Amino acid sequence: MIKAGAIDKGMFLLVKGEPHHVVEREFVKPGKGQAFVRLKLKNVRTGLVQRPVIKSHESVEEIVVEDEKAQYLYADDANYHFMDTETYEQYTVPIAGFEDKKNLMKEGDIYEIVMWESTPLDIKVPLKEVYEVTDAEDAIKGDTVTGATKTVTVQTGLEVKVPIFIKKGDRILVNTESGEYLERVNT
Image 1 (tube, rainbow, N blue to C red):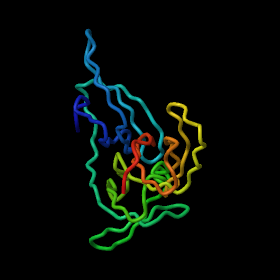
Image 2: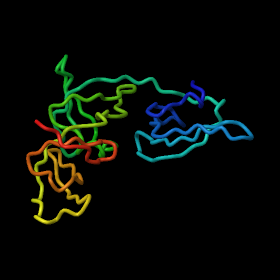
Image 3: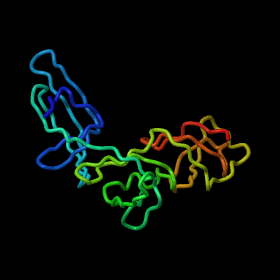
């Protein structure tokens, strides 16, 4: 059990027998009355989001999770396939619930999988990731309006809005939470 005031973003809680991921947390101390915590919780199994408000002195059940490093091999119609690089044991993680990770993960890279009672709860993708542009329209001469952008596709299938000077073959740094272009990476 953990006091609501000690809950942090990224933790996992057990709410009504279901595992939930803390997506957002806001501590509120009003001028009058008790302090409380406003949370945004995502049910790991169903994907449903709820926004409970809990008084800071109340307790909730925290889930003890383990991070396992694994190499991402590939995805098929229903599962992601990973391999433990130490034991070479292969295992699958259902795509259902992790659809948002599909275009962020690169085959062959190492990712952390958050496990609870041998059930995957989350796949941790780095906040910033470098991708190679595989499809990009050519910039049109004279199209130099300030802040002009175009949409490109990277090796994973992710579509990103980038400045018009980015071309096929360039490597770009992308914020994986927002999907926003950050900068071109020189190779």
